[in-house]
Image (spheres, rainbow, N blue to C red):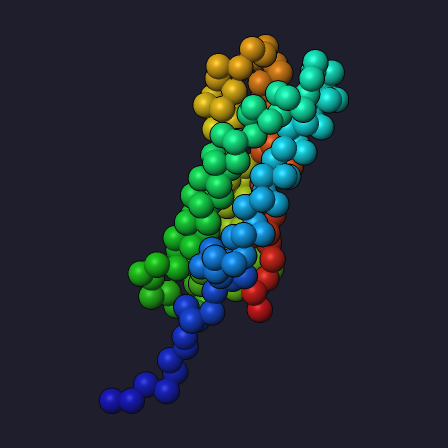
Length: 165
């Protein structure tokens, strides 16, 4: 038997996933991500009128950076989860979701799945920072919440929306 209708969709990965397997990109991404986390922390603390915001940001940024990557990895795994082990009919709703790996604007389902992935990652960033990173810091609960929210909003993985096709 010969099947001429074989499609190799899994052979093409989204750009943000390809970057995970290219160490030379990590040499740029790691310091850039640290810098973005630092700037978000510093600017948020400056706006909140912290005393010595740069010193506070430097002390906090390392854990923020590590937990931010953990959230991004979990969000990325969520994004590709529907594509694992599913033999999905071309016209089903789940087909659109699996297409999110290639183009989050393929249809409404791809867009909603991408938005869900970005939102879940942002929530993870908030939770990690609010309840782990800032747990022992000498700040009020309101300050911790504002800083964690700022990090969640400004460092969410918006690159998930970048189409690969």
